[in-house]
Image 1 (tube, rainbow, N blue to C red):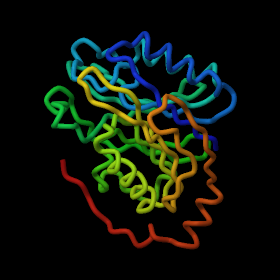
Image 2: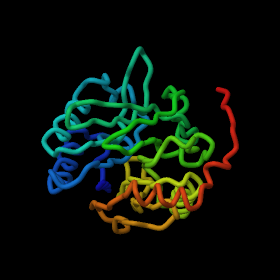
Image 3: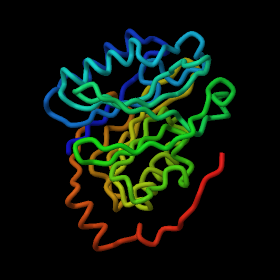
Image 4: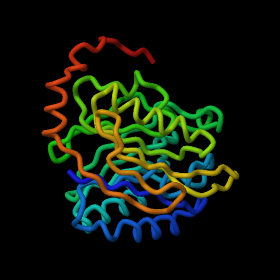
Length: 256
């Protein structure tokens, strides 16, 4: 399976410009990849202005994703701000070329930015299958919480959509590898570049990692670009059989 990761420079709180720019970045991937991975809040940047920027789930941004997936013949995923029943969600969405979809609401809201005061946290971990690959998605701050990301022998690819600041670059790079190693999964992380409307700088480091913690492909540092790498379910299965770490994992439950 081909995984393409987009690393954009987002226009602050400007949906029209962001979707246009992302469309141009994605265009060369039409009929040439299986999944396109977009970052967190890909249509606005990491804004704490949900009253202005939120939209109903089945609205403009979802329609854009559905259109891109159909034209490009791939699955496309990333998060945007959704308003539902008077609540705001940082919602990750995956749309297939056939317009099937799955979604995940960010569980760990970033209190330092005030996200926890404005958004409602998700309660459900998501695992779904696309083209024979079991996928489990998470959003940015979720990366710091390994119990929530724990593979229960039910996932092959973990995806992190993020707006992760350059000041914590080493943490991003380290934890992505850790999640791949401890879960014996492929990991895809999509981040942004540039400076947002609050003055926070981002440098990207978007990456595709194998279950050994080795980098398959990475996007150039601090550059708006994309990269495509290949993951193999046969290689993953062989590795897990030779080194069956997941069989010895601890059982646990989570209380909310």
